[in-house]
Length: 447
Image 1: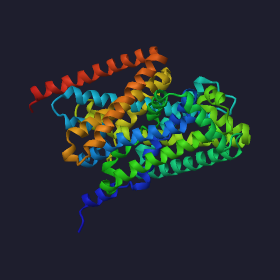
Image 2: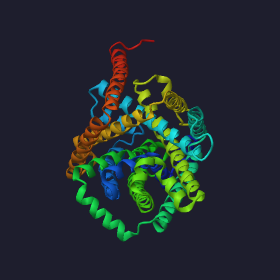
Image 3: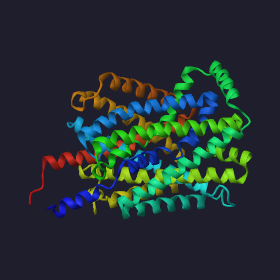
Image 4: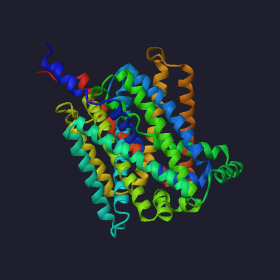
């Protein structure tokens, strides 16, 4: 006879492969691809699909260590817990990576919400109303906060619906643009060959590195390890499937834009280029379909980010590097962590500067992916990892990080100074909690 405890535990294992792929794709296919498209076309033109594929390969190398460490540790703290347990000697190192990764997620949560509101209002008379745009952004965060607090299973099913619908919508509109655009496949290949003569390998690799942020989100699968079925099978399946689908989706979107929209318009309109191009080719219906796809993309990204990162925040708080109240759970749902992340993301939206915060998130996720590869190499025997693949990941992520830093310093050095200052503030917070934990261990409270 099963005990109530075992029945409850089985009931909590609510997430299967489709929900897990949806969580990963939800975190990846958000607003990133729309923003990156304009930057990529400006730098490498019709070679954008190639750069996107290389970016996906870099993400796959990063995912290798996440999968191996995730299966070895089985810890929903993911990035933070993997580093802390691999290098247990330093409280400050553990605290710092916890603070950096959580605030990286908060920054992307704010960006996704602001992108959602921009698209939601883009075809209305209120498109230029910044106050209303921020209000809608905070409202959508509030909605998915309530959904995540309500039910793990309910969140999973809603995430399924949003993610797979957005994939269908974005794929259809991109294919239609390819068929009705002014460029056919033969001319596209010719233009790609011309761009290859002018674009340097350095530019292609820089774009590929910048594209890495569009693949950020696959890590969220590991945060659900306590709520998934068959993690030993579903973690690698979900992560690699999601990255493969993301590469395919991004390439199709990029080709749809390049087939139908002049390059100068893609560069000028940036994240709205696909909507504007669809409107030129298909009229208002095309614009509305792209807006629908963008709204679904950002909605699922918000939901997946709230779900995964709140569980990681709860683990960091449980270890004493955030306030203890953030670790409390009800029915295995870290409600205080969810509410806190929503509040901080809403605050970022109110004060503005989201482009700066996005750059912080980009650098942070590439940096922590590099640290995960280094950690995996250290215990490669225990995780049964390939030394060659892990070293390749370390080299690839290191080059990618250096290229992003070079791009930021040469194009947006003011933003880079702000990011360095933000790292300093977060490091100070991490130091305070690490010092507090050390003091508590040296002088434990007696009853």
